[in-house]
Amino acid sequence: MTATTLPSKHDWRSFAPLGVAALFFVILFAQPFTSLAHDWWTDPDAGHGLLLFPLALWLGWRAGRTPSPTPQPVLGLVVIVGAVALRYLGGLAAELFTQRAAMLGAFCGVIVYFLGLAQIRKWWLPLGLVALSIPLPAVILGSLALPLQFKASQLGAHMLASRHVPVALTGNVIHLPGRDLFVTEACSGLHSLTALISLGVLAGGLWLATVWGRAILVLAAIPVAMLLNGIRIFLTGFLVFFVDPKLAEGFLHLSEGWAIFVVAFVILAGFAWVLHYLERRRGRHTA
Image 1: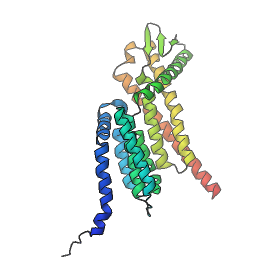
Image 2: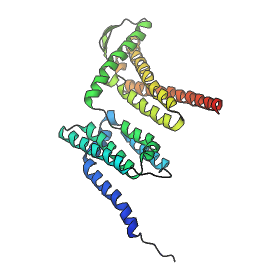
Image 3: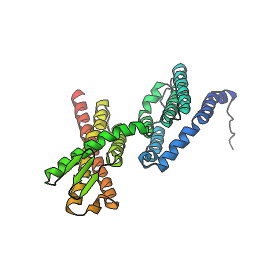
Image 4: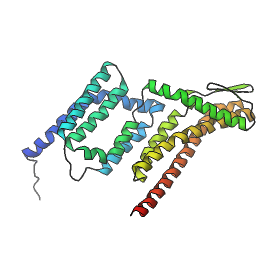
C-alpha cells in the first residue's frame, strides 16, 4: 500500500487566488454566458457558437500551458478592472454584446494575471474562435446586411441578364416576368460570410504558419461568400423563370443554400492548400 500525500498549506494557498478569481468570474458573468448559450441554441444566426465554443475548448486543452509561465499581475489586473467596468456599463445599458465581450476580456485578464501574455499568444486560436462565437449587435448586423443585400441582388441580376433572362432591379428586389424576387436579410450572405470567416480563422490557425497566409485566407472568405451568394440568387431566378416559381421557396431553396456553402468551404480549403504550398516553398528558399 502507498500513503496518499495531502497537499501542504503552501499548495492550498497557491490555489486560493485562482479559486477566488473563478468564484467572482462566475458571479459577474453567469448571466451573460447563460444568455449567450441560449442564443446559440435558439437563434439560427448565432448557432455557429454551438460548434465554435466546444472546438475552442478542445483546442485550448490541446495547446496546453506555456512551458515557463511568467505571470503579469499588474497588467492582468488592469485588464480585469477594465472588463468589469465594461460589464457594469453594459448591464446599465442592457447591451448584451458589451457584457459578453467584457466576459472574454476578463478571462484574458485572468490568464495574463496568472500565466502572462505568452499564454494569450499560445491560445490565440481558441480565444479568437470564442470571440467569433459572440453574435454582433443587431444594429451592426443591420448596417452590414443592407449593403450585402444590394450587392448580392446586383450580382444575381447581372448573371440573369447575361443568360438572356428579362430582369429589372430595384434596390434588393429582382423583377422577373410574372414574379418578383425579394433578396431578404437572410439571403444577403452575411450569415455565410460569418461562418466562412470563422472557418478561415480555424483553417489558418491549424494549417498555416505565417501571419500573412492566415490574413489572406480570412480576407479571401469575403469575395468568395459574396460571389457564391450572387450565384445562389442567379440559380433561384433561373429556376423560377425557366422551371417553376415555387422553386424560390421551401426545401429546395434551403438545400440550394447549403450546397452553395459546401462549395464555398471547398474553395476556401483550396485557398488554404495553395497558401500552405507557398509557405513551404518560401521556407525552402529562405532556409
